[in-house]
Image (cartoon, rainbow, N blue to C red):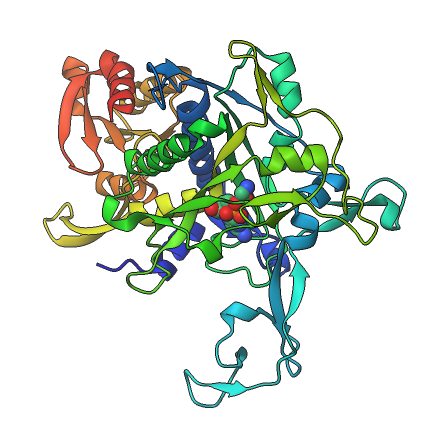
Length: 487
Ligand code: GAP
């Protein structure tokens, strides 16, 4: 069944996953707000990434020699940085899309997205057809949001909202080396907001103007960088599979040489078959780039440009660096081999919002189940991996009397005290309560019923298999914890 994006978007709004930003004022294109369930879902995605990549990461890797552990540490850097950062990184000059304007309706489009000079905002009288309209010549449009720092309103105070979190890591490379005992190879991870003034934000949160990235800059010896690139491609692809994306909806695609970013010597994208795309098409979830020594050298020496197989500092008409680097030493000294070098960088760069959207789309399922009277009913359920489900368990008293609510409330409190995000619901028929939880992806429902009052057991129902088991009520917390750990 091809999933329908409009159905998923409607569910997200109805159940409080996602709202348009500033909706009561008509919304602001390219900006989104996460509702009470969305915020839990996205937080779980971020936490799964941070735990798997940083705090609990325990990989032993063998690019050459014996298997060895490598360090992963975190950073949280500022959104607004020194403007020179973006000049040396190349974003100031090169981070742009080509855009065209429609002279008639004044709408703006990405030049590579408007086909046959047709203006999608001017539908003709015939459905599905568009009037021809006059377009301007394509011109460059820098995607960085500009702002002004302090009281200076002129160019002196001009700064930019970061379009990627990566640069905050590069400019802190020396600080991390000097303040920790990490040795190459090691990785630095960061999760944070990035901003791009996208010309045509579209497809729900897929292309937004404010979004969150989960990036790793992995520093390694140049002679091992190809192996580490392969390692991160495979590891990051597997991460999505482990969290429930099925392999037929996910693929790893190597960039063609002409697609490569200005810094990249090799990039592969993890892509997902989002339902808003035509059948057989995929959209980028994450890019894994081999950035060579481009970034550290740029921040040392000045903005680099490609020359032949390598990079040189770009100069102005006087032969001076076009944009000066920091002049700081960003090399690494290996005290075992006595070698000094500029490390190479492998960068797995994921979007937290895109990953969240992919998990939502993947989770959406429909089936048919009998209602209380045995009549077939359509059931909508979100088949989230328990680790990312916004609510892990819901507790119900079968009826609102005979001490059942008191018992159910006590179990609910025990789950809460154990740090398990859970819900309590005593409204309406039990079947409807199950449906409400299915629709938001709660993996386990615990019901207190007549038998509980006799033998102190409760049922636990599994969202996907619909299987119910009965266990002593004192074992509920342990059982839910066990399931969350082992699935
Ligand atoms: N540091 C490298 C970098 O930023 P990118 O491919 O431009 O690379 C990395 O972005 C990831 O950030 C993308 O794979 C995507 O998941 C996310 N991303 C980029 N632009 C986005 C946008 N406009 N809206 C939502 N997510 C975006």
